[in-house]
Image (tube, rainbow over all chains, first blue to last red; front, side, top):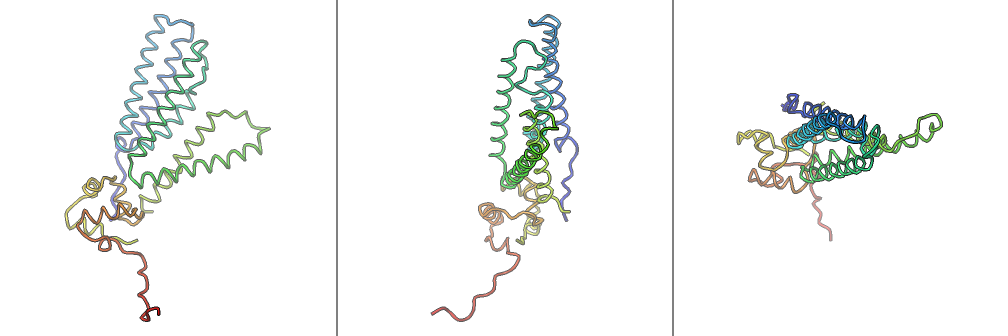
Length: 187
Length: 75
């Protein structure tokens, strides 16, 4: 008599994940577009920047909903998506404000780590175990992948630190999902 | 480890969510314990026993009972 744990899309966190991912990536892109043609903020750029900030606000709200619903494992792929597409700390196409973008990216990253640590401390013992085992799989995968990369490094593109972080986050999340399946769902 | 969580919960007409709330854990955790997929920590096992006003051994039993002690006491 196993309880059915399959939940509607919104309850599972998938919907808020998509909203947050689209909001943050779109917001980041819009904000950068505001400075694309000029070092200074023009009137047209101001509107784009405002839309970008609004989009980031929506993304933050969606991430908050994920945390409130207790499905914050979604924050792992969310962080991976943001790292991959926004690359905080890298100026990219922004000719000026490089330092500001870099510091802002670093601040967001540290804040995300602190929030996640706080959520983990507040979660119950099974959830903590799932993350512990998931994180182990993440780091184990990273270890194997780094040796494999070294093996083929002459033929592979130069490795960026943020790609490593993305791989670690995604393998942590995959490990979490596998472990959660083992503990929570009957085969 | 075997447990009688489902029976005890049914006797009190509690849902998994009700029990989870009383134990301050998630419903998924109650489900995992109930289905014997996860053995709770000692503090949580005591909390479960307390919620049902029972002794811990009335709720949980090991998979294999330990053999009874041999009749001859050591000298």
